[in-house]
Image (cartoon, rainbow, N blue to C red; front, top):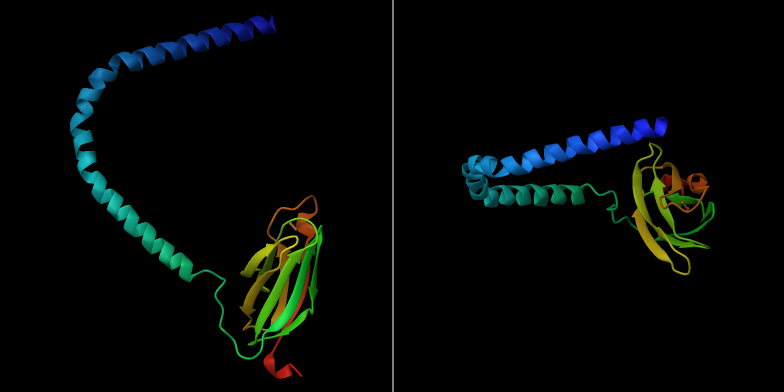
Length: 178
Ligand code: CUA
């Protein structure tokens, strides 16, 4: 009984849909005639709209590149090397203390699969990131200006405990370096 009802509903729906298609197809020629003037206007506007869209996109891209979080102050002094190794599912970051104002070179790699090495400030704003790849070392240069506790999170889905890949390191003020 249930099956027959479903079958009947299906057949009726298909018939209605077919009727709608047939009606649209038969009235398409008439409708198209009304559209010709509108289509002509659209074709004349098209290059201008395309130009405007291109200008807006180029402008937006330019602004977006300026706002990228990856550009940092060049910093002064010898770079501080930090080794960062990702594995399922943890980060090893050593040393876990760097000095503000001096460039830091993160040497980032992975023991197993690809991970995303992403550094967040105390407000969880992304400040820099690179890939952690097996058998390859990515060097990420960044100069921290604000002291504080920074967090490393994984930005590449790498398995069930991806979300637990967290580490912390501290950026200390320049004057307390020694
Ligand atoms: Cu490592 Cu996600």
